[in-house]
Length: 218
Image (cartoon, rainbow, N blue to C red; front, side):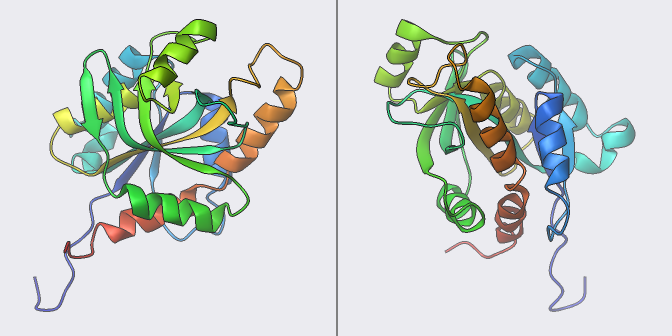
């Protein structure tokens, strides 16, 4: 490598579970300065684990992703009172029954999201994984444990990613369901549209986080 030449940055893999999430992310690519592979894993922790392990395994059409930084994203259920559909959750760690995964560059990612989505509330804290939809008393118990939000794939996605090799990982979720705005209530459609629109805006923040990985650590 020539003196003064920056080392190539590893690629970025953005993992989501649902087709509607992938649609939102792809819609947000227009005009965004950066690139990423958007991987639809399928729903649930086992599907996420398998899909990410396959993508980072260095084989087939995903061969270039072996060293990729990974962001888990999509929709989530908020656990804290006062959360609203369209709020953003930036995980400082993901956790589930199998353990915890620490996230990389949390403060910078939250700052970039505040820049690109200035009118949305951003929450930072633990994101917990579940293998089923969480409601009622279980939601309250998870919040009492310190978690801010719950989804079915982020913990498995990041665990699978770091198991495949050391790499930066992060998780950003958009609240679509919250204690005062549960999916079974009137207004769910409006909340879902709000969350979809927010998810369409996040890629520039992801790209800024990814670029920051090139900067020397102090």
